[in-house]
Image 1 (cartoon, rainbow, N blue to C red):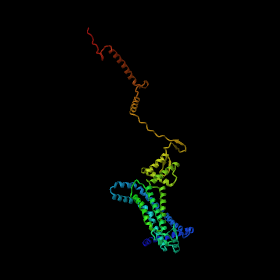
Image 2: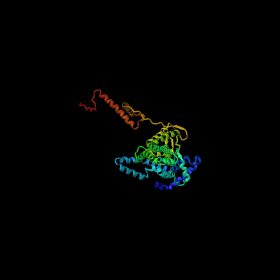
Image 3: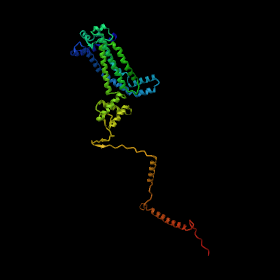
Image 4: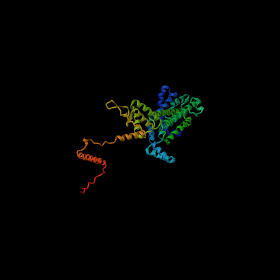
Length: 424
């Protein structure tokens, strides 16, 4: 323990100073020696630390979104090297390095608050042993030792002996019941937080090492809380339970308002957004416009839920624009003209009904009969040059007709040989 204290000694004094400042405020309201004053001081310390860690949380969200954009590439690597796990891992790490992403980015808030956690542990342990630390002097030390939360002293542990607990003015049963309840609440809150992340805010279409890591943490962290929690003072358990509740609420807010693409949370969010936009014909919040803008920019790379959202807008007569806004589309029954009046939209062209073979044949024959040209010309349409030829043809037709009439009277057809002169 001395090694840990020496490692985090640089932060022990600031943590003790913050606790004392909050204690001076709550002590004036609830009394300086009460568990409310010291317990709320620890809770306020957690809230202050988590507010300071919001930039890291935002960075964590951006890193998670960057991981989501790599899902198609990860899927290709998995399909290409599905029989070679080692090569698959090497290609994944190479992809992370090229794109500047880190699958362990989700652990940044936990790693950042670890120094504060161990500093608080050392402060409370010093209170239990009766040693002054940081800005906590002897009077504050005695006040902290008198503080109880539901009958359990702040510095008491589940594993403490009855004599040590009695020295702090409490019973061993009260301490173990309170610490057991707090450990169960810590484990349950951590499990619910991880389960919510895995079931609602993860794209399950692609299996990645990141998902396997989160699934493992969902079961490992509650076990860790149960095993190590019995060795932590009640004040540290208050700190840990408070930070778990904060993380759970923070994650619920993010899942509800900025879900991961391809997750069930995104499906619920887009369904709510589609209903709101269809009723008001506009995208109100800036955050919603940013999400609609990202969906439009994806084009053909949209997932199932995003395509369903775009189709829902189309059914409502709306079209999403590249800037995240929506306008009324041209496919509605009535569209607004530029002058504000309404004009009926052009009806859709209907496909002709399919005809049977006999109907097609009869229709083709009828069309062929109507398509025969009439080549007879009237007298007024004949050119002047054609009139003599027509007259000659007419005369030839008359002579031919006389010859045919004579042939029919018994004469030989064809030209007749001239008769030779008779000899007298």
